[in-house]
Image (tube, rainbow, N blue to C red; front, side):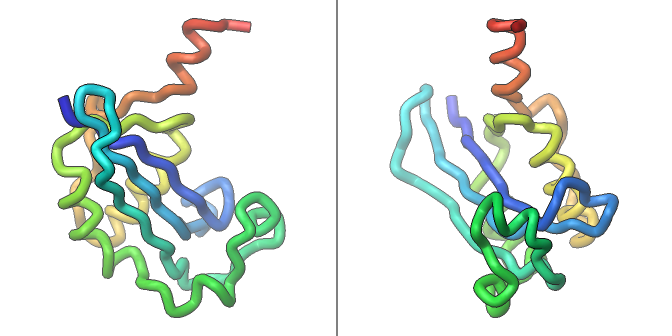
Amino acid sequence: MREIVLDTETTGLSPQDGHRLVEIGCLELFNHVATGRTFHTYIDPERDMPSDAEAVHGLTTTFLKGNPVFAAIVEEFLEFVGDAALVIHNAAFDVGFLKAELSRCAAAAIPPERVVDTLMLARQKHPM
């Protein structure tokens, strides 16, 4: 079984407020074991980095300028993830940003049934 562990960094908390992806990192698992295949990219969000977000991940507007925009990496990203399940901690956050970026590129959204949210699993296992 192929799975992709995925994490993102962003310019803020809400794509509805104009915040954008600035980094995507993925790790491929096969039968729950890392294969060594990865996908990683920084993304130029085409906007300034708010200081609150920079304090979280350390990525600056200056550093991100010159990196590809999301539209330039979308095909490579989608090819890497393929039809694998996506394992994401706090998936609603990351998937919301991915959905917004994919929509801007007229690409199909990731179906919710492909997403495994480890935050939800942790809360089920340890409710307190």
